[in-house]
Length: 167
View 1 (cartoon, rainbow, N blue to C red):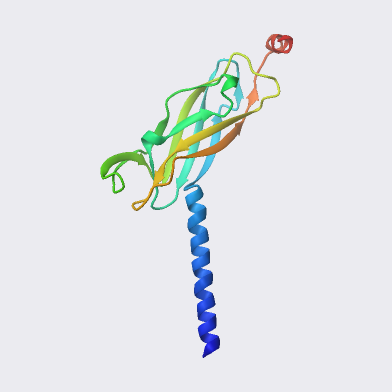
View 2 (tube, rainbow, N blue to C red):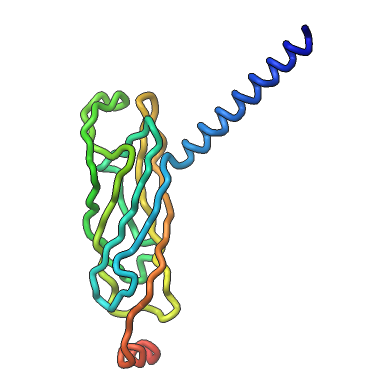
């Protein structure tokens, strides 16, 4: 009798521990993300696209007005345009008691960037920071930053390379 009770208690404790562990991991970042760059080869002052595919965990919404994408190293000179979110959903938010716009489930963030006129030759990765705030029906996470990166090839001709090495 005591063995059954003890095993039952241990099983319950393990289940609670793994449930709490899973919940805390989801709270750290309420989505999975894949980032890509189109096209892969970039020329000076060329426009190119960054796409971030999000798979937002169940019960979470990310407010559209909280999303902001920045280049981690702004001194590189990349310029970012306005974010395009799809699909944007309108929902009643129980935390603010207002209608909100945001993204849920599978969503895509797209933006166009402009490459700088000059770039150090050894740069082949663009580090980005996505700022956001996510909420469930019962609580909101503090605003958070998600860091991601994309690799690219800096397309250059011989004349451009000579100019860049002289500077």
